Image 1 (tube, rainbow, N blue to C red):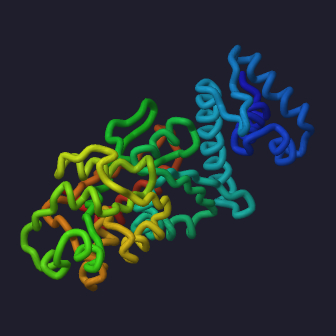
Image 2 (spheres, one colour; image 1 turned 90 degrees about the vertical axis):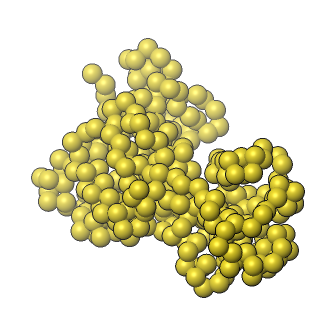
Image 3 (cartoon, rainbow, N blue to C red; image 1 turned 180 degrees about the horizontal axis):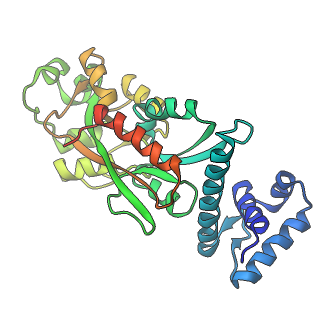
Length: 308
């Protein structure tokens, strides 16, 4: 049987990145923290931490952290049922979500539910193709992800599809692709060449984000390194950079279409869009938090995301 005080010490050491800071959080000595970790490692017979700076969990350590997070959630639910969501003991729900969803439909979907319950929200923002790793590692109880197949011990539910449009300001389009007004009024995509795209700076969200790379590979047979790009890992600043004519980029339809309607941006290739299906994955445990979060997300996604 595992000692949960030792599991808690493991979780705090990893979250704080070291033994000294974990000791301050747990209000015990650093040697006591080390002793708890050592007892846990002796119990499982494996090393649980890589003593780097910051300290990180080994694969076995991550499995224990996932187990500890699941138990915490179930205990929080039990306490909430017994105390009728006592605000003095709020449940923390950790969710991994991609930046585009967070900037548009995600928070409106769950804000009302979190307001009604004594729950605290802890969001971890990452690329939609990576969020399921946070679920696998036990850092989140659920995630918005592009991964359809459920991981072991998890369920996967389709939420909807985000469509991404290649957009730029008319000024940028005139500079790199010809007449911006013609592009805006064109019923079919104008001929944009590889040579033009090679010189037109793109705006990319992060090095993890491969959507732009896939777009150029699929529609223009270009490979990585054949174009210039700005890398701006902020959803708001990413869009602002495009609005300021720093480059063109792929913007989700929820953000792109209002700006196109106002004439602030134009769509460069209206018949060449990228579709990204989104799923809600969560642990298969009987916790009302994950069930209610899914219901709230599904209801809002029905109206904002494409369902075909």
